[in-house]
Amino acid sequence: MEQKEMKHLYWRAGFGINPKELEFLSTKSREDIIDMLFYESQNTLPLKIDTHEFDTLTQEQFKKTDKIQREYIEKSRNKIKELNHAWVERVLNSHSVLQEKMTLFWSNHFACQNGMILYVQKFHNTIREHALGSFKELVKAISREPAMIEYLDLKQNRNDKPNENFARELMELFTLGVGNYTEEDIKEAAKAFTGYNHDFEGHFVFNENHHNTQFKYVFGKAGRYEGDDIIDIILEQEACAEFICKKLYRYFVNDALNKEHLKEMTQVFYPDYNIETVLRYMFAQDWFYNPKHIGNKIKSPIELIAGISNTIPLSFKDTKQLVAVERMLGQILFFPPNVAGWKGGKSWIDSNTLMLRLKLPSMLLS
Image 1 (cartoon, helix red, strand yellow):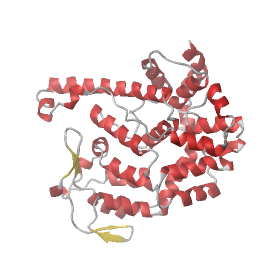
Image 2 (tube, helix red, strand yellow):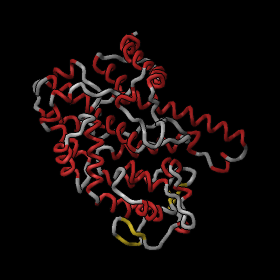
Image 3 (cartoon, rainbow, N blue to C red):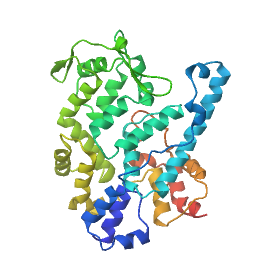
Image 4 (cartoon, rainbow, N blue to C red):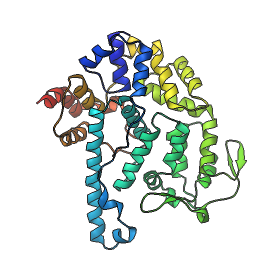
């Protein structure tokens, strides 16, 4: 495998590669290097910080007074910042680079924001657990996460008054994309997710009293469906596999889609929806290493910071300073701008961030 191809693979599947690692891989085949990427990302531990003061907190204690609520909200915000630091450290120091890259990818795909550290940490680790596994299981797990239940109003989705927010974003942003469903599909799907809730500690709760048990009519099918059934039906649509492959292609290959390459990836991904399988296929193709795809992506702030650190390489005594750089460059982990996530690409660049990006290597070195 040529050196320029190895660099390209590690920039896309990870966050760059340093000269020592490049030398080690110089005698390896493409297949061996791809195997190594996946092998090193097999057993990633959950990302956890110390949350002991929240672990025993009850809803009654939290709501005791307005002052206590404000204090815990502030403590939780600080803990989310700490989780940000921990993730940056993991990205900078982990050998499981593909695991980290896909955790970053899915965190933006399933963009979500919450002020409770326990929910944020749990949501993040659910993504981390399924990042290279089954997309179907990932979607089902996300639908049960307290952070997502709150973010897209599933708690307010009841039999007597359905709330369509989650069902709409599930189809539009998470699985199918605009044009591959109807308004009626959304309304009927919303009924299937009625009763989804969670307790204060962050455990999923299915409230049968708030669930619609009637027949639902979705994508030409009828049944007394629940949330998981709807996800199964959505993933039966090949349009779902194509939608996800489009996002993967734009993220890893090129913003300009190639219809033939997209068709190949979709056929690999559908109907099993195994994330590792489609990534392995993509990384193994000659077209992935086409010179027109090399160096053509604008890196996100996190990719840029980690990439400079890995390729020089650098070490940081205090990664908290890097969070300030995140903010200036326009990306603070765990705080996406909206449910659609960061747009990426040219949106990372404006007159202010461009100058900062040019100065960033010298800033980090000093």
